[in-house]
Length: 282
Image 1 (cartoon, rainbow, N blue to C red):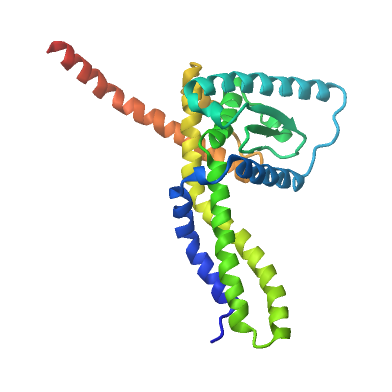
Image 2: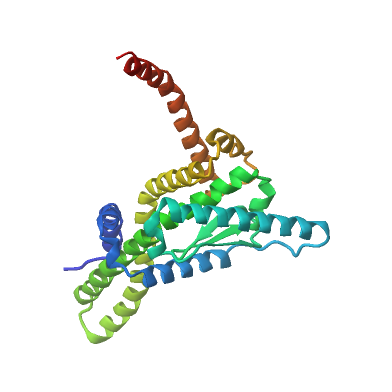
């Protein structure tokens, strides 16, 4: 019986949905924090390495950069203090949050499981208000607080296990002699690595929308604890499409989510007032 690599690729593509669910249901305590933090830090560094850098600043631009760096650090540290109050168990797995601006040309952010939050220099060009900066920092912190790095690591581990089992079996079925098996093994190794990577990324993309909502909710909780006005935040996030990248698209989705929550709260307000009046009359 001949089993083609294309069949295996198709099978793993179909498995991506079930793997995504399995990763969500997996007891993520089974993945040590050291492994999760290592995986997420390597992933973050690789992502940063592929992004174009900004040109070196000079004169007034250096002053503006320094002011933005200081604001990010100060706002982030205030949010971190609140985070440990709102989520008391957080200190058991994240010793501290750090905030740094890196000279990446585009706007965006990144983080790792250990609590390192990185802001791309291009974000400065959006000229965000302080409350908007607080929200995007809190939202990135939400990925750490929500253990999303651990969940994503679990997904990658599951796919690595699947491919390590499936592709060696293909080698045995397809190779009829030692020479053929050696050749097939080499091809299998490359195919296994590629399939593991793309399969895990496909599975992660399926759970990403729920992770974004959870990180938005965590950001709202952190800003509520600091007394920020969500209407002001939502208004500040109404940005022009100055560029198109995944982070800005996610930010636009967040802005819509906040507005939906505000509209729902406005719609529920009269009902709550009536209910309160009825309770008082009784």
